[in-house]
Length: 92
Image (cartoon, rainbow, N blue to C red):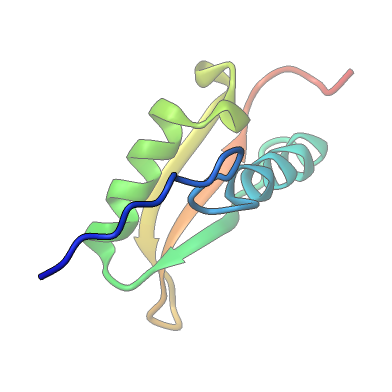
């Protein structure tokens, strides 16, 4: 095996646009307080549970944390989904 010397790219995120996808979803959910929506799907229910937990703990889109519910479930079509809903105060 040989190595190659190269500087890493600057100013690039690993997954461009992922953060904005959840920010957009959170914005829409705030406008429909109390309604559940599927914000992403996964290949297994276990993966959906991990994603839901991670988003609840780490995503800046779902702040403040106590104003959000996120959970994973398999819907009637067999998709493993991450559901979210906004339960905070009325949107200002």
